[in-house]
Length: 465
Image (cartoon, rainbow, N blue to C red; front, top):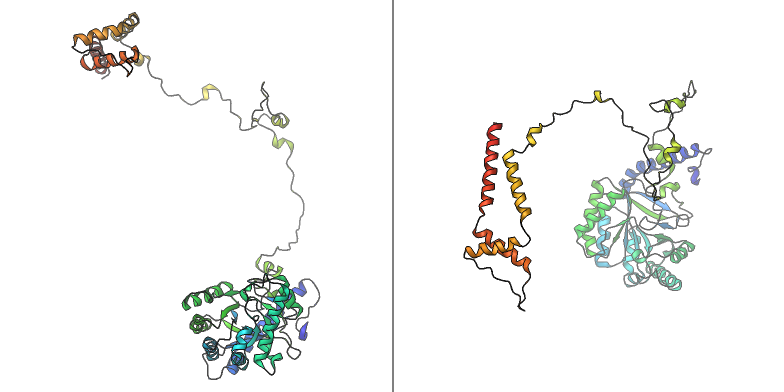
C-alpha cells in the first residue's frame, strides 16, 4: 500500500502471490543496495563489516518488538542482526564501544539511562555525532516496573526522556528516537499501554549475551554467536558499560562478517522519512502462515477420472463360517452367567478347534515297557517285612528300647531340665535319645536292608547290560 509497492491484486491466491513477490522484491533490493552502502559509508575500511541497510519503523504500527517477550520482532531477512546496547553512557567503556563500532562502520541502537545522561552528557552527544540511534531506559533503572504504580512508572519514563533530551541540547527532538526498553525486561501491561499511547515503541530482544552477569568475555562471545545461530537473525542485547562486552565485541563483529551476517540500522519513521514497506508476516521471527505449509507439502493432483464407477460390495455369504452358516453374534455377545451371578468371559467365535479323525493324527512316541516299573520279588518281601515290623511296634516301645540300647552302649540318657526343675516333655527327650543312639550304633536290620537293596540294584544293572 505504501509507495505503491504493497498493493494486492484480486483476492485469494492472487493476493498471496503478490505478497510473496513483494517480500522477495524488497529483500533483493536490500541486498543489491547493500554493497554500495558499505562502500559509501565506510571509506578507508574495505574489509569492514559495515552496515548493510537502514530499516525505518513506525512505532504506532508496531508498538512492541522482540520475541523474548512479544509475538513480533523487526522484519529482518535471514542472517540480519540488529545490535543494541543498554545502561550507558559510561565514558570508560562506552567510548571504547564507540571506537570498535566505528572501526567496523557499524551502526547500533543505544538505550540510555537518565542519571547516566545527566552525569555524562557528552557521551550522549557522541552517540548522536556518530550516527547511532538513541533511545531511553528510564531515569534510575528500577528493576520493579512490573509492580510499581502507573504514576511512578510514568515518572520514570518521562524523567528519563527529559534527561537524555537535556544532554543532547539543540535538536534533541529529532535526535532522540521514540524507542524504550524496560529495565530488566520486567514488563507490565499498563506500562506498555502507556508507551503505546505516547507513540513510544517498547523494545525487548530476540536473544541476549548475558553480559550483565559475572562471566568471561569469551563466554559473552559464545552466547551471542550460539544464540544468533539458533535464531538465524534478530535483535542482540548487549551493555556498553561492561568491560567484558568491550573485550568480546571485536571478536563478535569479526565472526559476524566471517559467517555472512549483515548489520541493520534501525531508525524511527518521520514525515520526511516514511517507514520501510513490509508485510505483516515479516514481523514474526518464524512466520506460521499458510504459505509455508503449502510450499513444503506436496500438492494433491487434479486428476480427470475416466471411470468413476464404484467397486462391487461383498455379499453376505462372504462372511459365512466354515459350515456355510452365519455366526450368531447376538448369542456370542450375550455374557454367560453361572449360578452365582458372576459374568464369565465371552467366548471368541474363532479360531475353532478342528475335529480331525484319530487315524489322521501324528504318529505317537513309543510308550515305556511295563517291565521297567516291576519290583523284584526279593525286594518286595523285604520291604513288606520292614513295614510289618513298624506297624507291630507298640506305642512307646521305641523310647524304652532306645534307653536300653543307650545303657548297653554306656551312654546315660539325661533328663532335660528347665531352670524351674521341670522337663520339656517326653517328645524332646525322645528325640535327644534317638539322635545319640544313631551316632553310636547302627541297627543290624537297617544294615541288612541296605545290603539287600544294593545287591538287587547291581543285579538289575548286569541284566540290563
